[in-house]
Structures are given as C-alpha cells and as structure tokens.
Image 1 (cartoon, rainbow, N blue to C red):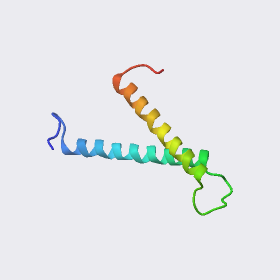
Image 2: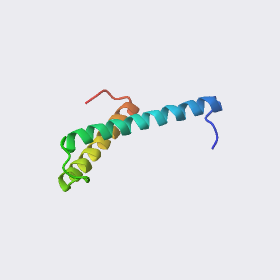
Image 3: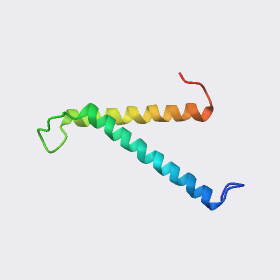
Image 4: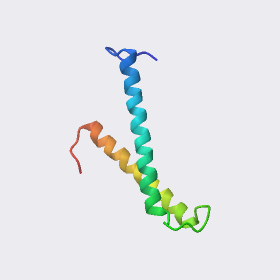
Length: 81
C-alpha cells in the first residue's frame, strides 16, 4: 500500500496508532454504556438472560447508528442536528 503524498512512515504509523486508540475508546464506551443500561446490578445468573441479550443488541445497534451518523456529519462538515 503506497503512502499518501507528503507522508512518511512515522506519520502513517502515528495515524494508525490514533485510530486504534479511538477504536479501543469507542469499544470501551459502548461496552460500559450498554452494560450499565441493560444488565441488572444484582447478578442472579452466570449468563445474560433473554431480556438482557435483547437490550444489549438494541443498545449496540443504536450506538453504532449514532456513531456512524456523527462521523458522517463531521466528515461532511455539516453543523449538528
């Protein structure tokens, strides 16, 4: 894969590192948010129950939809909704 014009390997690796940090932070926020919203504080079972699974599925789906929308808006340079 060729480097974009005017960029050296250090800049490319720096950008890749920032991207990885962003993705890890996004995953951690998603996990924390959906866990706190969907899983009861008092554990009764070792596995998630059906309601918790459904809630987590919906939460993750909505989180990604919003993240993608925000990314598109920022990428297009449009002001917020």
